[in-house]
View 1 (cartoon, rainbow, N blue to C red):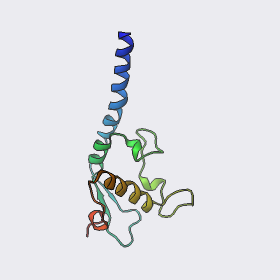
View 2 (view 1 turned 30 degrees about the vertical axis):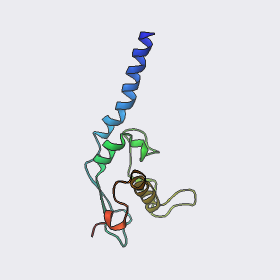
View 3 (view 1 turned 90 degrees about the vertical axis):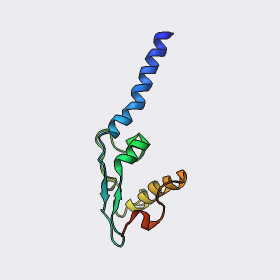
View 4 (view 1 turned 135 degrees about the horizontal axis):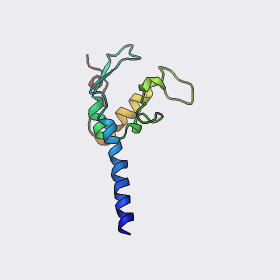
Length: 114
């Protein structure tokens, strides 16, 4: 029984630390400017968010670990009916998380700095 408990402890540590190790390679900051028309680009503290969330798959939900691509790789400016547009995804995911946590920017000019 002790061997099984030790094995489970090792597996749990490996599973939960994998996200932290991957987040360590995240870029410090990125600028989201793919579809900007009327608002300025968004400077995004990527590493800070990756460290806080701990799981790249939380945002990069379709990508294999270590092969994450930009959100705009799947979510184009305008999408088919079954997929959300880039703008819809960013506003729902980012703003939604900030509203849920009652922390972080939720107004247009908070992210789209002039």
